[in-house]
Length: 278
Image (cartoon, rainbow, N blue to C red; front, side, top):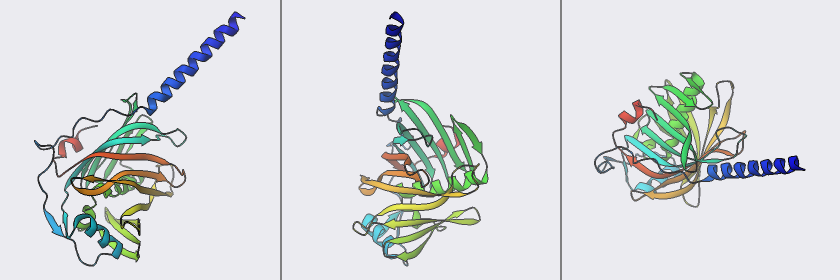
């Protein structure tokens, strides 16, 4: 009888601890410190250039309704916000925070942290510098493999949805027409090219889905369809840009990352952050 009571108490404690642990994983994260930039935290008004001629119809429509006749030249961006993360395919979504630091179209560093009761407990440090990809995660690390570089390069360009002017101002980027609501975005990858299929909402004129074939891990020689879906838009510096974006592997069917940008800094000095860690 006593043993049953003891076991019952222990079971109850385990249930309480498991529930407390689960609640902690759903707790909103504390924000990252303010991104380092100029004294005001923002760059001065960027250079602007006219929207080029000859764009596919849905592409030109989106840029003119977003920026008017002129687009800013973005050289760097720091995107900071909160995240819903599935670090492994079989785990439920947990809360976290992220900071993506970009030298636009060239290099990036990702600082992603899963949080427990708002505090970081799992850290993921990823970078793509000079065409070399590196990943440091609690589940292992890899560096300088061709599959990782291809995946990182696609991430570099997909994350430019938070500063889409780059798709017009970088001379290496090309747009190709498909139909009234779809276009192909061709981006550089070393001496090669990678392609995104970009789908536009006919009602709003905005892009809502980018699709590409991407390497998922070094152990799989086959590329997997990878989806970047824009779920929500918001105003940043008076411009309507993507706010929440999900990234999904088609073979999993659920987002591995749901990223909500809470702050975006443009044209600030990102060299120290890119060359550092975290």
